[in-house]
Length: 113
Figure (tube, rainbow, N blue to C red):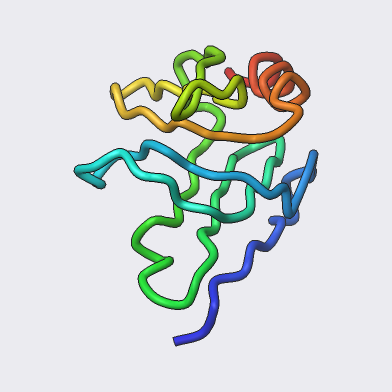
């Protein structure tokens, strides 16, 4: 099985790609742990592709912008000001950790439906 690659669809615009960061919380993973990877932001979705050798597909994800209910800034362990907490309309939560988070927080806030 090859490494998962992010592709921009014909009907979407890329805002930022290959943005290094960590994901600290995601649905269907019972513990909150740090997973390193790359974020991709388009006008239609946010994707996180975990990096590493084994098991990265189980902690990689994509969410549609139209399904986001709200976003807020937060801290990441231990108390770093890099977090963005994304709450989906179905109640699922994702905690993103990105340097220069204001740029991405503002962009997400402006582009959720």
